[in-house]
Amino acid sequence: MPKDSPNFLVFMVDQMRADHMGCDGNPAIQTPNLDALAAKGVHFRRAFANCPLCMPSRATLFTGLTPRGHRVRTNGIPLDTVFPTVPAALTGVGYRTASIGKIHLTNYGRHASVPAEFTPPDRFPELSEHWREHRLDDVPTPYFGLEHVVLTIGHGAYATGHYARWLEHEHPEQWQRYQNDAPSPSPLGATECGTYVLPEDLHHTAFVANRTIDFLQGHSRSQPFFLISSFPDPHHPYCPPQPWDRMYSPADVVPPVSREGELADLPPHFQEIYERRLPLSGREYPTRMPDEHRREILAHTYGMVSLLDKHIGRVLQKLSELGLADDTIVLFISDHGDMMGDHGLLNKGPFHFDGVLRVPMIWRFPTRFRPVQTDSLASILDIAPTILDLAGQPIPEGPASRLTPRQPPAWPGRSLVPVLTGEATSVQESVIAENDEDYLGLRLRTLITPTHKLTTYTDHRGPAPYGELFDLRQDPDELRNLWASESHLGLRRELTEALHHRLTETDIGLPRRLGHA
Image (cartoon, rainbow, N blue to C red; front, side, top):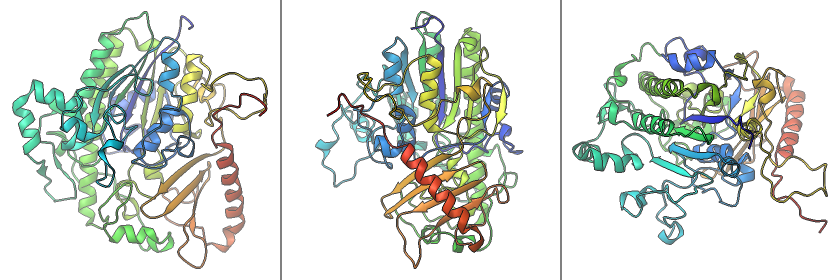
């Protein structure tokens, strides 16, 4: 390992939109620490999730593979340990690897039809029932290459794992409140909106930040580290603790974007999801609600984001106090976004609008990266090769073979290092997103270019195939679907061909062949 191997501190948040930061142009939300991080780093304003769901997106970050490649096509499918991971690659060359907070590479829940013996504690240490029933008090390591794990499972008032154990042992009276008291309802009664039952210092956001600081304080400079500090918020339920639940007024938030009648121009499941309570991978509630409820959800979400900003700021301050800032690459990323009322929709579902696909992505490394705000296309698929490139390590692909020197790369993502160092303004002309919605029998595949977005579907309930086509220059809010426009049929064919090419290009390149036959 080179003597100057950098540390990595990856802040990951859950279900945060890219435009929920001041540095992304939001005039209402207060995120001073994230804004300062962006000002001193490389802020990708056109970064996207490759799947708008937690488990597929996080598996992509860990493995460098698409959901098709690592087979976590949707939520509820555990990542197979057969796949090489970034933490394992770094552990193998001397890094100390750790995760504090949410991981979500294996299931949180088990359907009643699945026998318990299919989900044993040693293989499913993130299953909530194992922690609730005290079958587990720790995570067997290494866990997907992670040597040290402090786990927070779930969201809102339902979080378990090490966080719940800590509450139970260190704050038994508050633990009883946490178990027995429901969150205080919101003033307007919006769905899943309320106030966290415990004070801020006992909230899981504070817990993750505190344990991250503990790790940094105990760090030995003789060994570089790779640390994921992963916060469960601002995921629904929308229940920040006091006073963050009242920090923003529903009247002051940036309102959702929508157009009267737009759902009629979209594939048929949009209207159905809007009207009915359908089982979906991303939500099980109807999204039709009064506008004031959407604004209240936004206000509570803003409060959760500002709370995150405060505690991420605490971690960054400690990194500086310990003299580690110049030696540490900091990455801030979300696994996906949230519709937040745009187009009348909430959370994530079989939707590929910017609200759920576009994510915040900020990289900072004072000694090497040139601070800039860039519109260069990037995605979570690019994070794994970028990290290994920065660490000076090859992508793990098994035994080396010189038999096929022209074979495609083992990982389909692109290293962003040329953009980070100012050597290039872009490394790719498009990025892709995919989404298998088993509940509705849908498979979505999306191509995003600097100027357009195309989404295709496998299920066609109608006389002709349906899809989505948006001109992002003329219609940045994606309010007018051009899929059926006669004047855009040529463009649709061109983008469909480009999507096919990118899907083929990003197919899995592992395992490598060991011989001719």
